[in-house]
Length: 120
Length: 110
Picture 1 (cartoon, rainbow over the protein chains, first blue to last red):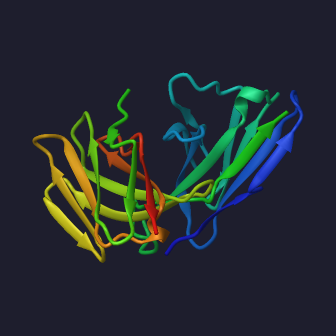
Picture 2: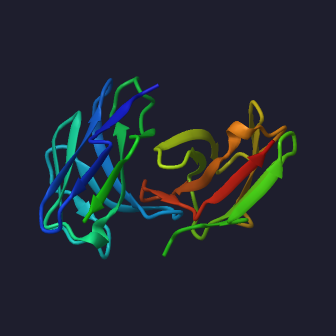
């Protein structure tokens, strides 16, 4: 199956600093990538959708200036949490969806292993 | 919110028993998917059922879909301790975005 990786798997940072999380599709080209946020024992909430080469579309209530998303290539998207605060501590999961090719099946979405962010 | 709801929120059973989880959603869908998540880990895709399908099987998993009631169920037969995880349903509608349910935390005890 298609593989999506995230780096780092966990990060601890001080309040006020910025943190960058990378999401890579390892064996396919991802025309669309999604970023989710998950609080403990809760569901995944979609933060934003990004298409390669264009600006991300943010869900209602998600601050685009705080959560910067860059999808510069067909295999890499980054999420930068700017001026992080303790309330930004969460589990961030990315997902990638393939394009018009045979592998992986078109329009199927694959998830990364997640990044645990702790802001002190 | 378009988020679906799952019940029960938590389920504890003995190994060998069957586990049934239910999912309800709010809008019309193209398909419904079930995912599994081990504690602190990413999501594993289990099964997808399309809106024109009523039942689907995959190994010990059985999924049903009732679009008239906007509900789905996931049955895990002959459960094992390794099935302990959170299970989420996710729907895909016309907007082509996945919307996740609230999840069921399953614990299978030896």
